[in-house]
View 1 (cartoon, rainbow, N blue to C red):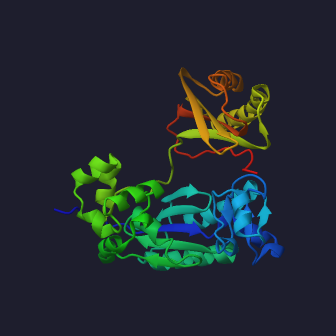
View 2: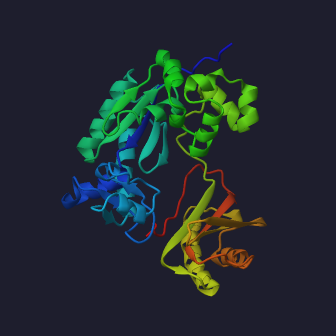
View 3: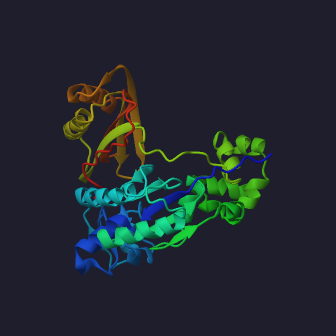
Length: 360
């Protein structure tokens, strides 16, 4: 017997090329031009790309060198996180005019449960239109939205009519929508999993739905149960207005690769200072310290140690980081160092990230 789909009305709002759009809004000279936030012609990784740049294959997470190769006219812009947070705060205030059940995923996207909303409007589709219009009128940016009965379908739908559009998947359309959906568009199915599914003859939702729970768990472990249920429209995760903090992190990308461990330790002390400030601001401490190392060839390594007690003090963090740093020899010069603290002492539901500097 198939489980009933919860009768919720969920909106997923996703800003269009958020960082890049903010830069174009603030600087008229950048409007209509291909721009990349973060990265550079010589180093770093692209954080966001304008739609003009995306036409040339420039996208987030590719190197600045590759981005410039794809689009010779590309303009690199340094990120301004304080400005992005300022704009994000305005957008989230608009969300809260409609419902207190707002779950932020990042600065530029969030889930809204409007089943019972402050406007008393039974149409989630009309509410999404109104919210998007208000963002445009009051902030000056465009947003896209997906509307459906659960978070999973709403998130997929928000990507359908980008930019500056929306898509509603009504309750009676959910199953067919998922059956026809290419497997690569399923939220939570990454590139590696997509390839694995292709090898198993799973290309769309209908093939995924044909597989038994046992088959999916055998090939995908715990994720198999997730895939089995979501393709049947079953995703009961509620919109949580507060999210549990799992870790607090700080990192820094260097203009020149580091090869001296002594100099690395100096830089780690600076990173630890920023981490300590944020930890104390939110009264957070943790037991697990993780050192993140990204080498010049872009390979990444993490080294962790869990203590029997909670810490938040810079001196104690550096003491553990120093031990991790000298745990084994570096295999190459280093372009990025980061420190994170997890296994926290708080159940306070909040997401905290310290970003000293984006990749350049």
